[in-house]
Length: 304
Ligand SMILES: Nc1ncnc2c1ncn2[C@@H]1O[C@H](COP(=O)(O)OP(=O)(O)OP(=O)(O)O)[C@@H](O)[C@H]1O
Ligand SMILES: O=P(O)(O)OC[C@H]1O[C@H](OP(=O)(O)OP(=O)(O)O)[C@H](O)[C@@H]1O
Ligand SMILES: [Mg+2]
Image 1 (tube, rainbow, N blue to C red):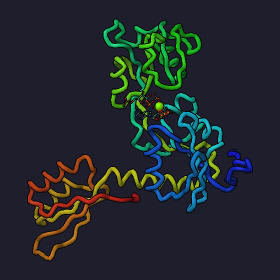
Image 2 (cartoon, rainbow, N blue to C red):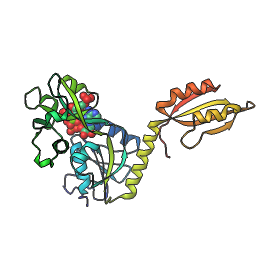
Image 3 (cartoon, helix red, strand yellow):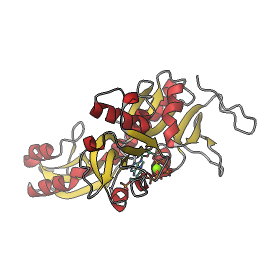
Image 4 (cartoon, rainbow, N blue to C red):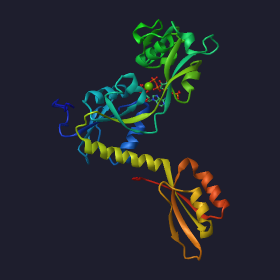
């Protein structure tokens, strides 16, 4: 069960759900934005890694992303945000429950080797020197390639905590395993990707025996609403009732379009949710069938 923080200099969290978020790095800003969007209010003192939420029985715990899955799995933390890669690397996938994929922190864990060298596939690195922050996932991949258990691989896998991409240039490694988003870091280090171990993104997780199931469900529903709001826009337009069936095929909505009669004989107004990434094409198609006054409105929040 989660242990409340009993250190006298720390706030009493015994009656609060402990919610861990990355304290820095690539996920930090997105996590703060998400907390704000779901109405979680808190004041975090400088250098303090615990902040009491002022409007819900929650305590935010700011931890290194790499540690969050383990804390949640062991029940020290009730709910958290981290990367799928970290869950797999910390071998906690059987001990945490994935509530939602969050759509940010998307990247790939890839095997990388110096350009211009004869290494063109992960097989070419078997038995050689690999440097990574993801020891377990790297050993598993080379165990697959070598056809042995991870602890019996010939490939030499060494841990570094960051700036992994420098290892080949420094002569420490023949290849690396690291995260790739844009590829800028990889290319700047004269490396190229030769194998993808996994695709990752940030996820909301709890453990298998949550102490505050109802509150965790509330958080999940609020996050789901924000993710929906980010994925969709509200499209409104006027159309001749004769073309309404065609228009509804173009914009079917999540459930169905809202149709209201206009004060202009034979015309209706339609209001419907449309996926943000499709809205340009949908507006063109609506215009082509005679729709007018086509408006697109952002959605601040939503509940399915
Ligand atoms: N370049 C990236 N693009 C997208 N997501 C990333 C990227 N790098 C890391 N992540 C995600 O964020 C998680 C934490 O990585 P991050 O680099 O932010 O932590 P860190 O290395 O401890 O922090 P820092 O890089 O500030 O030292 C990763 O496990 C991954 O899920
Ligand atoms: O493909 P890109 O967009 O360049 O992103 C990939 C880089 O991002 C992360 O590094 P980070 O910035 O977290 O620094 P770190 O290596 O010190 O963790 C990761 O370790 C890669 O190095
Ligand atoms: Mg990093």
